[in-house]
Length: 146
Image: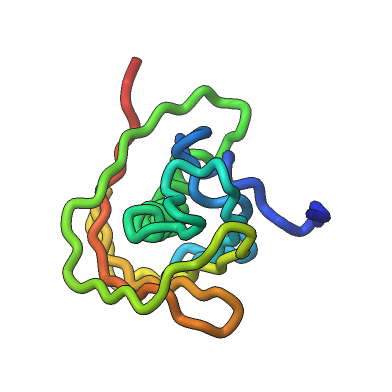
């Protein structure tokens, strides 16, 4: 895969690392919106029978959404910032299809509301033009003091 200079390294906005990192690049990021890409590899922990299962899609969405809220914690890439975050609520979720290994999925999330470190986000994931999953989730994220 060609690495373009205009892509944003997801490591700058998420504490996740392999094998739990479910997003490769941020394609677009604002205070209210994020778009990520992720290539599904054979050795991914959420791949079963050559398909990226529902739990993987949900984790991909959560990590995509976390980038909106997490960007304020990772403004200085040289700082050793530690954060904890988790899904507090899934208001609605619809799974339409599962992608296969080798597929490159695109996830899009838009901030609905935010109160301090809790946010409500609408998100969707696509494989080409096919909608795979749609959800509205609440996330919580905070910095962990050493």
